Length: 303
Image (tube, rainbow, N blue to C red; front, side, top):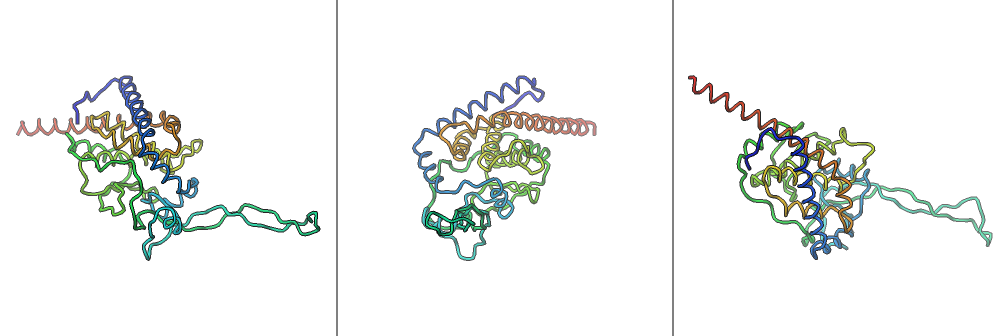
């Protein structure tokens, strides 16, 4: 971790964050132009765009779910098979049905109209299936150590309002925030860089997307939540001299459904504001750690 002035000028910090988020936007734009991203979009187009309510239903039943589709869709569209004994995830899907009304048509027959209703359907997460890998634009897990890792990890733990657990996550996810259980889970045995970056990402989810914190005038779907959390993780990592740019660019672009960065631009102010607040809190925690170390050194010398 690069050495920094622990009491930065607030205007300078905001300008620095603005500069980093603009770099993020440029990096995402470059990913959009790649052939890998086109292949990824072709694959993602076969998945349903779930409503906010269904996103919540999925999160409540399987908090670490990544991509969901029906049993037949996994077979037909992706060549994957749902494993025997897997428990499905229930969501609500629209359906059309016909009803007779109290009118006659031109032939004197009872008139039938089509109406829209809803039914419960079952989906399965990709982690519940076996088969060929899906196209991806992501990169391998981040590797490398972080200078001052323990201090930064302790600072993140201190500013996080919910408990943090390290577990052996089996579905490929590196971490998740459970709003239902009010906790963050991080995959164990990751590199220092990946651990720090993932932890920042999940804290950002709690900060912006916990039910108690959601802005009712700013409803967001799952894709936007991921764009915001990953963008905040990128911004904060860059601020502390930790390079996760390639991973972040690919990850953020992968959650965007259009061919431009309109969605990211719409969230930039929220990203900048949240990153600024988190950096300020992290700096305060690092400052407290430094003072405790200095006090201990003074006490040790006096003995």
